[in-house]
Structures are given as C-alpha cells and as structure tokens.
Length: 270
Image (cartoon, rainbow, N blue to C red; front, side, top):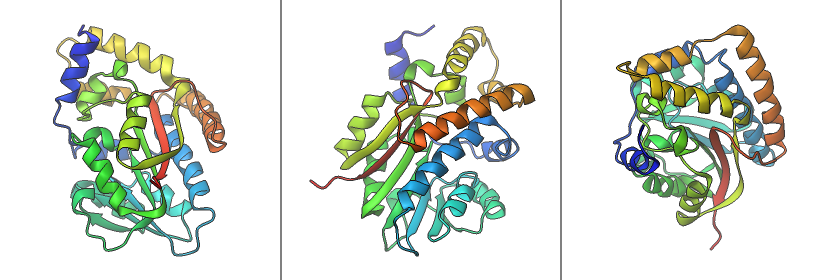
C-alpha cells in the first residue's frame, strides 16, 4: 500500500473534474440510498435555519447542482425564495429539468452569468472536484451577498482515499483544519462546521481499506457501482442512524468524526 505522504502527493496532483456518465447511475439510486437520503436531510435542515429570517424573494444558488438531487430539496425548503441551479454539464441539467421547476444555468462560479448576489449559496460535494479549490472559494465569495450564507459539504480524511475518489475524479479529501484554513484565508467566517456521517465511518474505513488491498485489476467504476447497490435491511438501519445525526446537526451539535464535513460560513467582516 502507498504511504500517507505518497497518497497525499498523488491526490493533490489529480486533475479533478467529473464523469457525466455518473448522473444517470446516481439518479437511479438517490431516491432510496441511505447516503443520499441522509445528506439531503442534513442539508435541508441547515438550509431551513439559514433562510428562516430572510424576506420573501431572497435568492438561492446551488453551484454544481448536477442532476438536481439536492436542488429539488432546496426548492421545497426555500419556498419563499428564488432558487437557481448551475452546473458545468448539460447532461446533469437534463435530469435536473425533470426533477425541479428551478431556473437552470450551464456555467461555473468563475464565469457566472449573474449581475446580482445571493443570500444563500450551496456547494455540495463539489469543491473536491476542483483543482484550484482556493480560487473556487474566492469566486463563490464574489457571488455571495454581504449578509449571505454559504453552505458546503466535502469528503473528509485523506486516509479514506479509495477507488471511490478515483472514480469520482476527486482532487482531494479534506481534514477539518485544512477546510477551516482555506475558508478563512479566502475571506469567510465560520458559523458552524462539523464532521458528519459518523455512523458509517467504521464501515467505510474497513470497506475502503479492504477494497484497496484486494482490488487487483478491478475497475474503480465497477467497485463504486457495486457499493451503490441497495440492501434493504442494512439501508433502513443506516438511514435511521443517519437521520438521528441529522437531528443533532440541526441543533448545531458537533460530531467527533465522520466521512464528510459540512460548513456554514459568511463573509468575514474584516
């Protein structure tokens, strides 16, 4: 196996990006798979708190909305606002058009075609795909209203790097302090940040390390698609555990570990 220093160096050098073929595969499982159900619950709870005091007509943007899986929940939660989804890939937006009534834009944060700012911006498991994540955070900051909120999620811990990250075209996984530093260095003030998906951390750690060890010549995509299979009893149990986490996170509690990180930030006042 690679040493930690070798792994970190090779991950940082990855070009990133996204495989548009994943949109259809994910759309087939997102309605029932515990990971997507739990993430949507966590995001919806925090979004509800972020927009609770905003006047009607506020603007919300999801950067990297993909196939609309999270966007449809933002649309439900932000009933009094104007919700827009933006993604680089037309393939993803085709699915999003079938799942939401939101306005959709093909573009990215560095060349966003907006003449206004947003009171809420969401970026969910997007930053890890971008080689220049610091530049992405700066570009996103320019789209954020002075009193607005950025809510983002990223995968946690380089030690969990596996075939999943390779197939997903990730550039990196984040340690908590790395994400904190990059957010603060790009002009954000952290309101809330925690690891989450703690309930599945042992399963992911063991599963990913065993798979890396036993992988052989098996294709990374094949391993990912196998991991996305739904086993009903296990799926229901993990969904229940992760929904309990979602309740804790809605109360802004901090979990000690997890396979992902979630952060709510605002523009620094400095």
